[in-house]
Image (cartoon, rainbow, N blue to C red; front, side):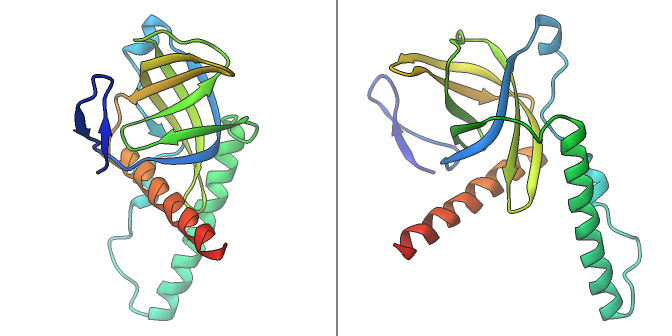
Length: 181
């Protein structure tokens, strides 16, 4: 957890680590009807991919081959799904993301309380397509647009865990880059 100062100058603790990244992202405002029905999700059924056979193979080499084959199939399914759901052509945006929310620069102003659909791809290291939903909790006019802060809503722990994994993966990348300088 990192210590931050809120707008009143008081110290408070952040619940999740944050990281800056350039990610494929599209943003749209939700209608009133959509607000009630949204739930953050991966672009595929995570429970299906996490399910395991009821019996472990007795041959260690066979188990390793099956594991590698399963990873390759998961990767291909993920890529096909991303293309079908429009994730392959998303524009890149600089974001500051954590397990609790994110901020970004927008050309469009959003009002406090607006609900947004955030369609994005995170690399952890393979691409992971997500539909996230958030409430605008911060909006400030700046020189090149608006700085928008969003708190994620209706998000299950499995989805949040994937975001946190991305944050730690990206932090490791940043550390490696600093060491190589």
